[in-house]
Length: 335
Image (cartoon, rainbow, N blue to C red; front, side, top):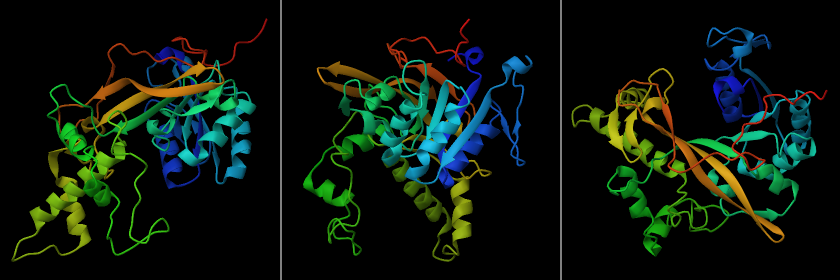
């Protein structure tokens, strides 16, 4: 949506560390309303254009599955058209069915999900045609940090790690599943961690966290190498963390640079991708695919926080009514 089209955002979030932090970050963003400790909605005019330039953010949370309906009803009463969902795969069906039941999902409404529900969850998934889930999932969007994009030359760090991991042999499967690890889980006494089915096989939707985990481990390893000498070994975790915050290198997911204030990766060094869910109905079933419709271009400046969104070639975002027209920010008032 263009800036002038988006005025109100409702946020449905799981009341845990991830969901609450994400929600407060949205409210504190320079683009949205500013979070008030007193519970009020302190809003910021971001363009000097007066009240009509304010983007209002209001949220509702749930702690348990039993609280989802109540939270959705809170948002439904606000009359908003655009919603951000900060929850997890296990919550998806109940949340979207509830949103449809209370009239805030389907044609005329926009749902954007975050990292808690990855694109691999909906890609290839089917629902009964005309069902609440089929209707609510149509045109849904997802925005998430991405481990990188495959290059035509196939020589980037991301390409190399994916090429290596997707050679799925019994040895790589055993390695990923930690076969032989001294600990165990309920799935198998000889397996410590169980990978998702065929996650090594899908070249199109490699779980982004896979590459991030790799780079995180390498970053700490390089920081440890910088600290450790035969004369002065690593003394404690604090020193290691300080070295990690200063470390910069080119990893599998691109250039790695850490913000020492947030202890997170600088936004300008990461790739973010926006996905769009499109369902095709064949008989009694609607099957969904997830396509990247736009992505960010990382900044070349080490400490930059700027990101630029570019459209994926030949791709457009289709909303829940199967058009590329953004819905009205608020429902139209009948004459």
